Image 1 (cartoon, rainbow, N blue to C red):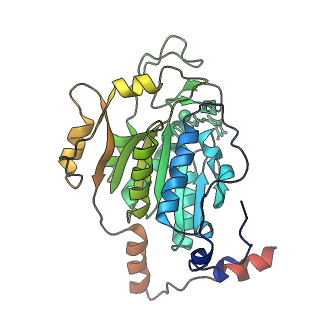
Image 2 (cartoon, protein in one colour; image 1 turned 120 degrees about the vertical axis):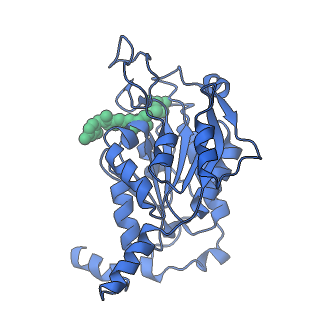
Length: 300
Ligand SMILES: Cc1ncc(C[n+]2csc(CCOP(=O)(O)OP(=O)(O)O)c2C)c(N)n1
Ligand code: SF4
Ligand SMILES: [Mg+2]
């Protein structure tokens, strides 16, 4: 694939895509995930969703923490930021506030999002910054070879819990809804068509959009496989009103303990950027954009 010419960010415009349409947002290198890892399908789904979204790659940044899933930015042809464990969301927050025109996509695993990054997860959900968050839930710490994670099922055995976990799991969907997220969806890595649609809706949503993806770790957690996910989930019906918060909570509290797949909740309200912009103008400040090339020139 032809790589785009490098230009200063300020000189690049969306119009450039008109004469050079992109076919992929994936990088040229082959991902280093294990064969059949669920994260491959998430990468493919994001690639398809971005193609439909239509922004050029230099207006997109993928931010991650640490973990197998957090290696994502290496496999993309967009800007990327591989940060520290649990810190994808604070980095994404800073980026979006500094460069509001960028499409910011945070990605990471269940450990990154809900253990070390749990604090950031909850506050990001209530702040409603205009970003998309792809959470790849494999119910384990894949990168460090299979310890129990906050989403691991109670009683499940792992290297760190040889007699079975004794803690209740966190449900990222429930957590996001109750912390005020304005868009919450859930997909499975093996259903690329549905996942692509959910990611596209998340990208188009104005506000924090969480897409929780059941993405099996075939090496260290074989109990969460396609068969398990299919038998413990259900597709959200077309009669569900995604603007109804109570109906969304009701979906998650399925009487048979199954988890919903599809768009669970969506309601637009002012974003963090808009609310901060309001404060800045009240305080007599300016929302003028900084000249990033000028700042970069001081250090390069
Ligand atoms: C501060 C810090 N603590 C611990 C680690 C070790 N560590 C690296 S990845 C990881 C967990 C990854 O699990 P998850 O976020 O679920 O990603 P996965 O590998 O499953 O995709 C841990 C504990 C670290 N890198 N940094
Ligand atoms: S260890 Fe698990 S999560 Fe990591 S790449 Fe392999 S299959 Fe995927
Ligand atoms: Mg994990």
